[in-house]
Amino acid sequence: PLLIFAQPGANSLAVEAEVLSTMATLAKDFPPGLSHEIIYDPTIFIGKSVDQVIHTIFEAILLVVIVVFVFLQSWRASIIPVIAIPVSLIGTFAILAALGVSLNNLSLFGLVLAVGIVVDDAIVVVENIHRHMQLGQLPLSEAIPVAVDEVGGPTILATFTVIAALLPMAFVSGLMGPYMRPIPINASTGMLISLAVAFTFTPWLYRRLF
Image (cartoon, rainbow, N blue to C red; front, side, top):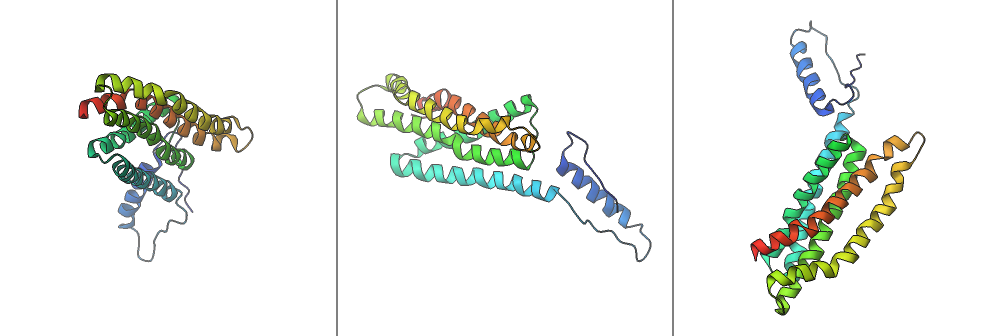
């Protein structure tokens, strides 16, 4: 049997594609009766994890649109949290790249958790701003800072409460420590980015759309 391992830092999916392409080319020159078979391919699980992240993003977007539209009855308000999801994820990827965190099954699982969480802060901010606008007591320029200030404390507290529950996993020692570390790092990073997006990008986008 021939064992092929990707070098540290290499893209496992790209290595798999190159190996399969090379083997398909070599197989054309095999003598009659000789064939090859892939017995174990761990990149299959990585591919499924990537697919799960993509599915989770689309499910989160669909649920956000439905929930926000049902309660606020505004398509423009529904668009804002939807845009906040990719913005938060792009920021998360940038921070993870700076920290040197690679994408594997466990880090992708952490991103799946983050996707379900990153949109919450934006929804809370949008709903409170929209409530002030429906009351009509303040103009938009004054309603936005008041609304953000009202939900700022509870939103920050809720975010850091979840981070406090997840982050200790990053300091687990022993054999399981390095394997479990990407989960809390990815999820916590995603929540911090989403918190920043909710207090900066979301109010700005609301003002642009309304």
